[in-house]
Length: 221
Length: 221
DNA sequence: GTTCGTTTTTCACCTGTTGCAAATTTGCAT
DNA sequence: ATGCAAATTTGCAACAGGTGAAAAACGAAC
Image 1 (cartoon, each protein chain N blue to C red):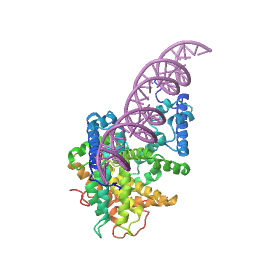
Image 2: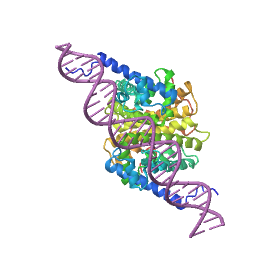
Image 3: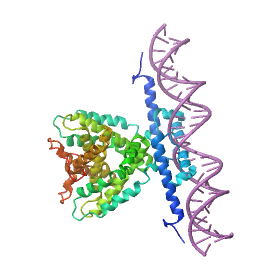
């Protein structure tokens, strides 16, 4: 009858394989010879499919770099959905975001190795940066909905949006500033923890010469 | 000898006129017949210049919608630069952002009339949304630098970034959620005030059933 | 192996964008 | 007025990303 979602057949397996082949080839070539220097025809050739077929898998050249972001987001949403009762929003969010801050920009830290490379690629190519920001934006909206539902009755949708936006916004911008400045590894993590702290405790606490102790949630892992 | 930056000559005046003609024609046609349905050739024709010339004024089709964002940002930066001594960051920023929250996404509230239209246009066209977010992102980075310099010695660059990101992030996401929900006019302003309040006071204050009184800074004007 | 629904390929075509050289316009000095 | 040099506009060719549609190849079930 309708084999719509079989996941088992050779057909599906082949499709997944092609998808991966395209994504892998693309990202490799992008980082090796540059994004704009790499043509879709070349990517398709490297994956042994026709140029037209590429667009059967990805809607645009940019999208191929974020091939796994949808899955990552679902993961986050699920985590928000089963929050521990009584847990404060700030805590839930820092906990959830800590595991997925990267998935937001496209999934950039499963294996820390290529993570840095992907991030560099994204931030250095305007088109990718734009696509990444749009993805992140949509993710935040979805996240806000999820938070709103997880705290039904306590937090209305726009309040949830404010909370999510504040936290994600702080961490995102601070992280970028940190990277621009040349920080690496742990330094970046510390910055993220600090930024989360700013958002959680509020900007107001930053004026009267605040005792700089970071580690507000438990973001420093 | 070198007439590099005259601003007065007929040459400059004509250039500004063409720029405006292009931008106006473009935005009008975009809203009337749709973004993708409007071709650059048509825009150029409407402004009586060749297609090629369009790219002498704007780097891309998207950019034409944000033709005044650069100027807007400079305004904000200037305001940050001459902060009142002793003024808390949170206060300075809410004050400055209140005047320019729109300029960030491309300048969408000088005259409230077309502001809504532009915003709708931007948010409804993926390509424009992406471009807008990228512009906003860059603006935030610049803003963070400005804040850092305005509070030299008190706030390091990444801290400034955290602060700016938190505030802008909260207001941006809450505003969008509000618009998605169908809010208009004052309702949106109230949401923005609330969001700013969340960022300023900190997410932490949102858990133990907080007394909902908004109006934290002075954002409600 | 035949048949049927899917996926891939081919092909034609449109638009955005860029490089280049030719043509035109403007600013300025005589 | 006129000429000249710098700046701008234009036309043209070419490329890449992206889409629609029909034909060809392929996997699944019988």
